Length: 272
Image 1 (cartoon, rainbow, N blue to C red):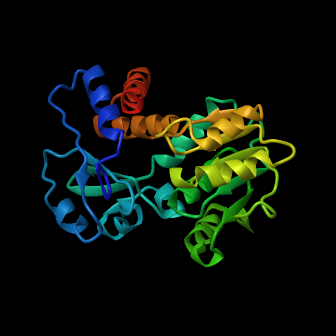
Image 2 (image 1 turned 180 degrees about the vertical axis):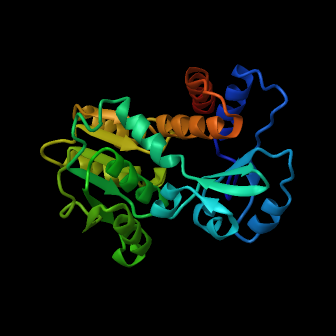
């Protein structure tokens, strides 16, 4: 896994659990500190013994011109979090979107149970993935709360490619509208601010999806639970997107239960 900073990542624990459960004892997965400047050389250094890479910020967009082929979803979202090495090519995938869809489906949010109206907090790459997830769940509109409209250009462009109509609203108590589904893509440090906003919404959201997984529960998760809503944690997103990566890299079904248990155990260790 490449990114910067990278030391906090739970992905090595999840992948190690998957490989152990699959009997792939010779496989290795580790976190490697890598910024945008070092990405081209790092990709060039990956020989035939490499199956693939996971990417986190700030590399999901920077990697695109370095890849040979992109799945359509990567082009739509404008970000790849997975590189697969196959047939001497670098293939780009986005597993964040199907990870979000699966995490929400596990809580009963899907095409049969309408997701919207939906409100997304944040305007970065994860917010663009959330728009794609909503599209796949049958939603064609979304409200997005951002601090700075001027920095939402990539999000608006992704929405146009996805065919989703976006309404930008200021990230403040007075402007944030009520919604059935809330997806927060802001970092843990901003969770308290979003929690205060959520607590004021009438009616309260039915489902709140917080992409943060540590520390857990976040103030937002606590506020959502106190209001009687269903809460989806960032761990569920992490497990499902990692599971898709495991399937791409190994060609085998991912052992979800083992991966989830390993992630929960590691988070308990960190909290202790």
